[in-house]
Length: 125
Image (cartoon, rainbow, N blue to C red; front, side):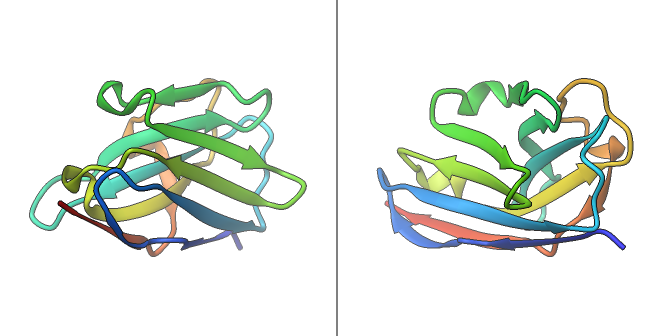
């Protein structure tokens, strides 16, 4: 059974940085993608960043390029999201997710079938 467990969320002032981690167990990385999504209460979940597990190709939400970096360490079974120059509008619950089949990184929520419980990120002005 695949399990994804996020950690690293918290409260930070605008301009600061956080690194989220997602511990992965029971997952097959071959022909699959992993991603980070976020959701504000009352709004739809949105894609943040995705990585193709074999080769490391990435995809980012246009508005976050240059500030957020996704990476995957398969030896440590951990997915990361480095978040820099954080803004109050980055405040959200952040989720780690994984596909069951994927050939290139993307942020289409529907195709991510496995989800973690989320970790809260709060950015104050």
